[in-house]
Image (tube, rainbow, N blue to C red; front, side, top):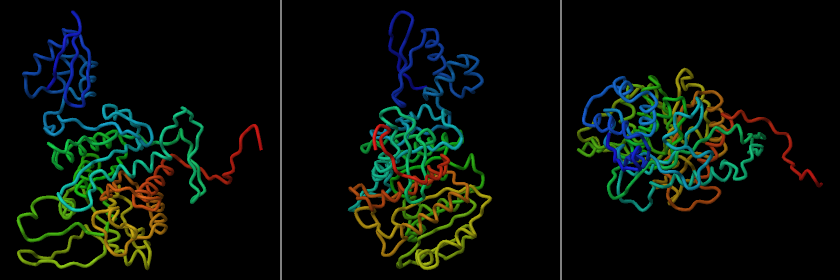
Length: 407
């Protein structure tokens, strides 16, 4: 337990920790117990509860003054910072246990695993949150009677039925934090969200974050399907020592080897490239199935929807360069062609209706300003459909609203 103690008065002491910046006030007797415990290693939860009492132990664990023995040193730097303009209800990372099964926890992870490049994607997820907050920000007037309306599908969602909570931004200090440290914080938060039955929706960051998001689901989902929507397979190798370092271009090699990942569908794959064969061999991975962008655009998504395993929970890993309008600086690696919006929206609607979706991420979004037709807007639109389904949106046959006192 890494804590600092400041005397308040004769009976009370303020306890503070660099982990999340939380402060608690406690009686001196309790502080004396904590200080004696801090020099002991390997204490079990049962021993701590017996020594401190259940109520004190739960408070210390809730606010992360006590960490599991196997917690990464990266976590000590903090977890999440509140969003300036949250989408849905803001929720402190300390209060994740307040989520109900099926609630959505939104967070942004500023991961960029490779340096350089003319387009930065670390903060691009903020653009998606900005789009979402326009519709899903909690009413400043405290009204619960407002509704969200979807004109494409002729449905409305009552604000009180919106199950969206914004955890903010995974903490990142550019001068001292690596992509791995940000990823470990992200994984820790995702594990806690799924532990209580919540659904994480993570805004990236580059695609390397998928290693942490998908890996975090292993404890809850022993068999998981991954639907990767992407222009690139992210299976690139050079036959050189750098292949041993995980990044956004080879992350699916790492994910396909995860024991809990039972199937991977790659949708929107396209382009052509030169592949070295020096020190490399080509092999077939039975986990991986592909629907190219050409197939999706000319024959549709029928094969995907028919052959995806309905017995699996599915995580959607969406790289926005899959989209036909994904141009620089909206994304870092644009590719000729791509997936059109409305057929993809219809496919997404069927996925949500038919399959059990247990998490999503949207990655490789450029930091630059984007318009109404940009990739951030499309990502927000797809997320909105999930929220409408989750909240039990109802058909709405009229969108004419007039003042009660007038015509």
